[in-house]
Image (cartoon, rainbow, N blue to C red; front, side, top):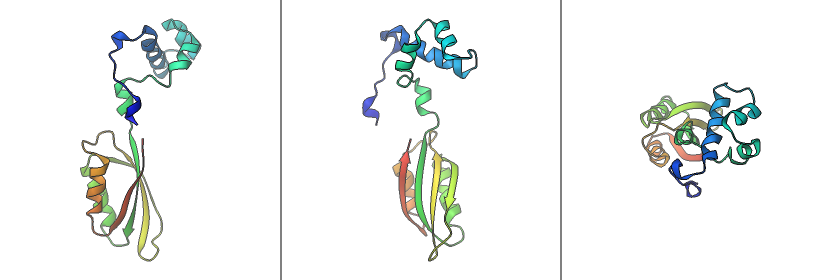
Length: 145
């Protein structure tokens, strides 16, 4: 995924790239009511803004709010879910949502959405740690954003 990105000092880029970011800030902070007002204020055309708005981000925007969705099978015994949540917390991730099916044949399917932007380690490391928990089977990463 990161193969499509470069880190470039903005001093060598055309000025309108920075102005696209400025328009975004004006809109996010409520300083302008609409795009027309914001682009006029910073001095670029609406077409320039719309052409580049989905491709220009500041480094803080890229790391903000990274999410992952994982799936596991839990043996229906007390303490397994809490052990898994403890490992997730130790790894520096936060839980957004947990969906658990009713246990069938003493096993429940669990899907967890995580906020992972502050994790110092990797998702692979977290999944390896989860795999070590007795009663937790088949940990898988379903998606990472």
